[in-house]
Image 1 (cartoon, chains in turn green, blue, purple, brown):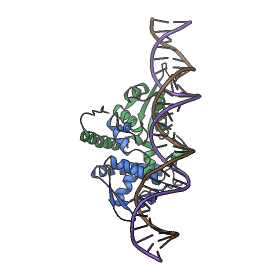
Image 2 (cartoon, each protein chain N blue to C red):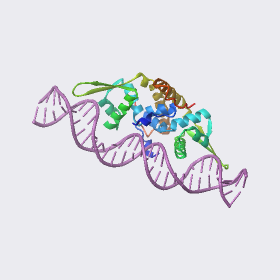
Image 3 (tube, rainbow over the protein chains, first blue to last red):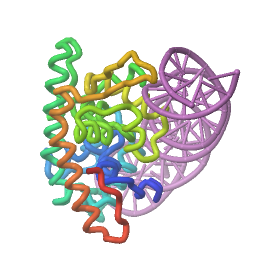
Image 4 (cartoon, rainbow over the protein chains, first blue to last red):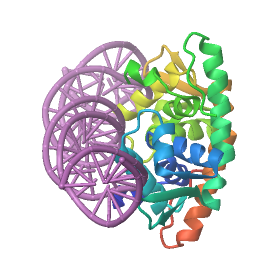
Length: 118
Length: 118
DNA sequence: GTACCTACATACTAATTGTATACTATTGCT
DNA sequence: AGCAATAGTATACAATTAGTATGTAGGTAC
């Protein structure tokens, strides 16, 4: 993520730069529903994500103070992720969008049958 | 926007695909605060947007049934955009993010002084 | 001693998204 | 005839974002 990304024109822009991207909100949501999650668990939960994207996204969230990364100096390595209060503030809104999306999907048709995020 | 965009893995994913992108939420927000807006007005409001991106984004929003495009067959041309009830459902949540972002920006520092979206 | 575990790192490539700039159509107005 | 106004299109290009493939560390179990 470049510094230029920090140059927002307005607060709507700023906000969505922080939670945009392919996986950010899904990660926030998953971490929220589990409280504290290990890297490997996230990797299995976020279907299709590669380790590179997972690490990259988590680092960006950490930089923006949305997740906390706790490293246990053990072997094999253990790293846990959890949400900051700042990120928790976003959870209701992610839930709102999720519910909105659920209604849209329901309207569309039943044969798409997307996998639930719960 | 490709058809693959329609292939969402979960509803969080689905939701954010519909409102993600550099300008979508800003446009929804601007149209909301003005009710009915003409193309040229939007272009002047959304600082820095190019006609290509504006048209493209509006068409995507229209496809997703978030905005309504009304063409008046006059010369010079007149086209008005307004939100659908589906998009209006998203407004409180965009406002939530906007307020969240305002708090973040305030915390960061005063010397950034981003332009308000109101 | 070698395979295995977790949580990455690195290099490269592909796909998507956005920018810059120029151009069009239509008709009233001067 | 030529220009202004509006809502775009077209084309080429640049930047950003995502994906693939492979490698690494430092122990532990066999």
